[in-house]
Structures are given as C-alpha cells and as structure tokens.
Image 1: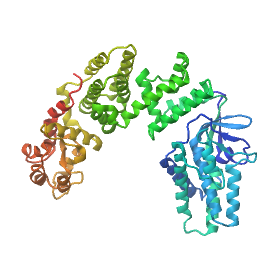
Image 2 (image 1 turned 90 degrees about the horizontal axis):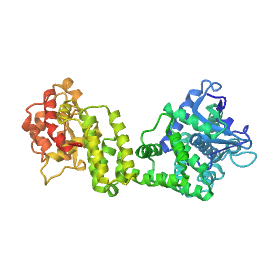
Image 3 (image 1 turned 180 degrees about the vertical axis):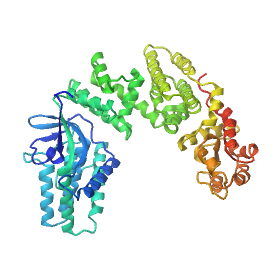
Image 4 (image 1 turned 120 degrees about the horizontal axis):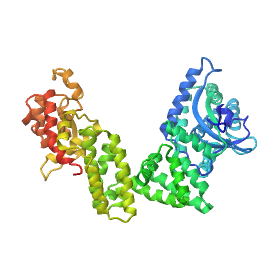
Length: 561
C-alpha cells in the first residue's frame, strides 16, 4: 500500500481516552447508527469471553475489534469507517458509568465520574465521540450526558441506539445481581480497564476521502466489508451544491432507510445498479456509481430521486407486496421468499418499473418457471443464469428508454429466456436427482399438490403440512430399511402434502399404516395417489414416484417457450 496510508495499532483508550485531546467526529452526512441488537449481543459475548480469558495474564491480553479508517485534522479526528463499533463501545462505557453511580458508594461515584471524564467527555469541552447530524443530539442526551436526558426516538437509528443500550443494561444488570456494592464496583472497574486498555484496533490514517474510498473498495474486492451506502452518501453530500440540496438528499436517504427497514441497503444499491446499468465491473460498485455521476454530470439530488423511486419497487419485490405486484405476486413471492433467488431481483425490478401489470406477471411467471427447471431439475450452472438475468434487465431498461412498447420488451425477454429453458426430457430426468431444503420443498410440493387437485379445490401451504413418507425421525421398529432410506429423506419422491391433523397422526408410523390410514383417506390427490401406486416403500419407490411427478412439474413450470 502507498505511503499515503499509515496503519497503526491503537487501544480503545488511545482513540477516545484522556490522552487524545481531539474528539472523534463522524462525518455529518454519514448514515446513522445501524447495529441491530444481535450485533450488540455478539460484541457483549465477545467482551465477556475475553474478560474470562484475560484473567491469567492481563498485561498481554488483547482483543482485536477490527480496522477503522480515520483522517486526522488539527482539531478533530474524522472517522470515515468504524462508527458502529466506537458508538457501541461508548454506549457500553455509559452503561458501566450508570451502574457505578447506582452502587451508591463513594467508590462507585468516583468510578462513574472517572468513566465519564476519561472516556465519554473531553477536558476541552464536548464529547469524545461526535455522531452525525441525525444522531448527534439524541446520542448526546440519552448516552453521553450524565445524568441522561430522556428523549423520544424520531428516527430508526435513534431506536437502534436505545435497543443497543438496553442490551448492555439487561446484560450487565444480570452480571451484577447478587453482588455486594463493593464487589459491583470492583467488577465494573475491572471490565472498564480491560476494554479501555486491551481492546485493540488498527487505525488506518488517510489524507483524503479518495484514499478512504480506495481502501474500502480493496476490502470489498476481498470480501472483507461492504460500505457502499456510506461512501455513496458522503460523496453525494459533498457533491451537492446547496444546503437545501443536502437536506433533500438526507430526507430521501432516511426515507429509503425507513422503507428498507432492516434489509441490507448494500443489496438494494447493487440490484438497482444491475437493473439499470448491467453487471458491476471489477473495480467495485461505488467507483462505478461515482464515475457514472461524474461522466454524466448528474446532480446528486437527481440521482437520489431516482434511487428513491427504485427503492419503492425494490421493497415491493423483497417484501412480496401483493398490492403492488398484482397478479405477479405468486411468482415473485416464490422467487423472493421460497426459493430466494436474489439474482432474479434486478430483472424483476426492470420488469416492475418498465412493463404493464399483465406483462410483468408474464415475465415473473417465465422467470420462476425457468429457475425451477434450470437450477433445480436440470441442475445447470446458476452463474450463467445470473449473468443472463443481469444482461436482460439492462436491455429491458434500454428498450424502455427508447420508448419501445412493453409488448416488444416482453417478446424480447421471452425469446432470450426461451433459449435457456431446458428441454422437458431433461427436466423429467432431473426429478430422480432432486433434493430440496424445507423451504424449497414447501413451495415446490405444495405447488404440485395444487396442480393435481380438481379445478374447484385448492391447496394452501397454510392449510396443509409437508409430509415425509419415510420420516425424518423414523421408528426403528416400524422401518427396517433405515440405512438405505435415510439419504432420501429430502428427495422429491419422498415428499408429499397432508392435512395438519392427518400429518400429526401419521408421524413416524410405518409406510403400510400411513398408506392405509392417512394417505388413502386424504382429500388431497398428491397424498391419496400414493397407496394406489405403491405397495411398499424403498429407494426404487422414491425414484419412481419422483418420475411420476415429472408431468406435474412440467405442467406447473413450463418456463418460457
């Protein structure tokens, strides 16, 4: 790495402790606090485990919290990466401070005061960590001040701050329960000193934000982190021409965060970019977006406005919003929830944004059918299908931009996807090799059950249970060929659908009893056909039944023709 980058090992106390006179400042337009309770609980568990390990030799004990990226200035340290970890650890110290005061002893009050003065405040005024413009006031009032000032959360990041604080409150309270006041003070002091002096990070100092972007992209390429939204928001804010533009960007950005909820914003930007501009090149998504905005001379506000509109459609896809998806709902739901084929999202996004409702239904049905046939039955390379989906998503956008009709776009999509569609004979052959996860099985088997019923009946997953003919936990007295059948538990041929009452009663019983007392009386064709076709159950029967289901699979998922 170039001389511009200067990595140095730092203890937590070196960065926000009393020996560092400058405050650590989160860039004002960086995203807000985003750690979920699970992330905080993981950090707490790590601290506890480290605490237990360190008792043998405190002098050499060290816990690595990961790298941070900073830019040093005369009066502050700008924190370009590492906000979540430093903010969460500050909350940890604030909760320790509160419990120290609550002991009611002089020693506890002194310890609480020391934590506040050494790790939360600065002698020169202000606080050791200054959050971004959205979170700074809230974080100061409910975390950094002592006594704290109760505030009502206005943003999702505010609620996440309270959630993180509550994880520490509950966890530390459990550890202190039953201890005397003196023992509580000793325990708090020991934990405070451990984290302050033995939690280590590598602080990478950069001269400019461009250098920071280079570091992040390099780490992204190696799969170590993904900070595209943070980088992009910083860039857009820096590129904005006026305070009004920055306010508009911030408001729409917060709106997108709210729409996405806990979903990964990185995934949204990647899928949106793939849908609009094609596959991401080797040098990384952020750099592509930055270069595109610079080349096209697009205003930050225009780009964020486009992202906001795309976000509405994207959320409808990932949350399976039936009101937005209309008649395409069953197919999008299958791809998003049941099969979880995220490579289809850019193409679905292009379809939802560019096609009429009935045309989008046709596209979603073709994608769903092709996925089942190509990936599950024919067992072909999903990477090739992904590349084709990405390319087609971009072409549909281009055709739409050229004012070509939705009918023409759909016809092109059908012709393109049909070339990838495996032949029916290849699909039939694949039934003998098809093993499913629980989620996949519930969708595929219930769909087959639907298609096998008469036109006046319908099977719903909510109304029926997935049934293993050879059970997951077989009774050895009921099944004599356990070793032979066990590898086939999740095979297509070993799965059926059964009403919930019958499913509970059938449980782990023998095939003969299941067939006679539960499958034969069932109103579901997929179940009552089993005793008609099979007298006993073994590997040959499983493979034969999978083959018998082939025509239903082809009828259910014809794919694009």
